[in-house]
Length: 464
Image (cartoon, rainbow, N blue to C red; front, side, top):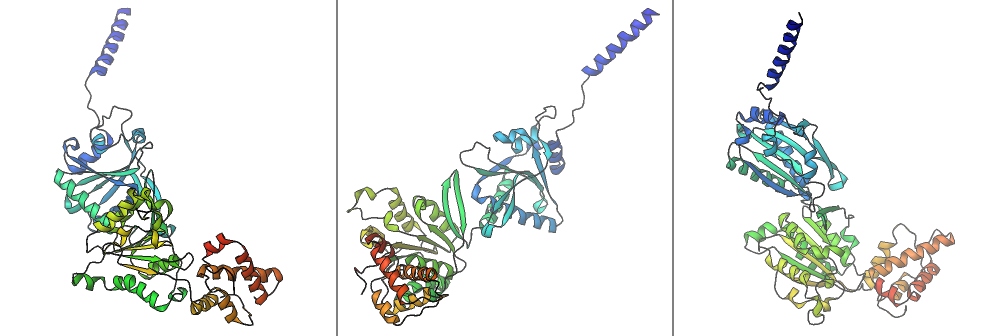
């Protein structure tokens, strides 16, 4: 009996060993199964083509994919998105080739999971959910194609978003990626918006909203304002007719004059009046991104580049040899390098036209017209007083006296004068602004010193 039991135990152990050693049919990894079913072929044998977008194009790429999804679903062809769960993505080691060949016995094999989205704020602060990691299976034109969206790894110096395409042939993948790039350009969330560009870990595009400025807010001599409007708004309105007539559309307008005369306000007014144009604001650190700004201007035309205080980067090289750096040359090259049919307006401002590099005005297409924005004359000062006193009650015995006493004052000076007089009236508990308040406000501003007067654009030494 003992021998029989021993034999049975030995035989059972033998069978377990044989079963363990017997070859087993391996179950394919999840994504290999998905791709095999989608293509009806071994995905490990199919070519993969990739394209990398900068992060600022992430919302544009999402809109392009959303449009494709709508078209595919409307045609009844289906459009599926599957998430990819794997630790490898943290190190940028996930791609379509990995999904198509990963061994199912590897515990690190990517598995289907939730789709990862990143919320991006676009114009007006509107949130847009953008895929940051996901596999898309579609059949555009009844030809199966797979797309893998993946963001850059956490340690990437320049963040980006990559899209890979797998199809029966390399040419098919390339055509589809070209179609996506075309849609990204056409659907850009930046077109027709007011933008600025920053640089850090890659380029960042910022949205801005300018206040609505009406023509009545621009207090300039009528002839001066008409010249400015003709060279800017007029060109924009008649762009097609000018193009048909063989006239180039790229142009540059320089607004120059003392501080506080309304150059920036005029530029903002023009930007809000030319509807549908992309406006790129260049101030401060943006002066070092001229090449990138002009690239956006070409891409999103019709466009306007507003470059304030251009004298900071374009001083006369004879007066200041140190200003022959790359920023100045880049500005000149970009203004020169635009195609003649490019509808790009450069709107530049400066307080010091005498300091500008002569090359800026040497050829049409750099600066076509320089317009002086002067200190306001008596008629303009009267209008400015009325404009800035709106909402308050002025009770002056002789308004003309105030107009005369502000001779040589800029629009900014008059605006601050009214604000100070309003404050003094509030301190007195008076519902109206009287002569005494205005006299005291004027005295404070004049006695504040030469720097304050210069900053506010007051050219006269003494009030009359």
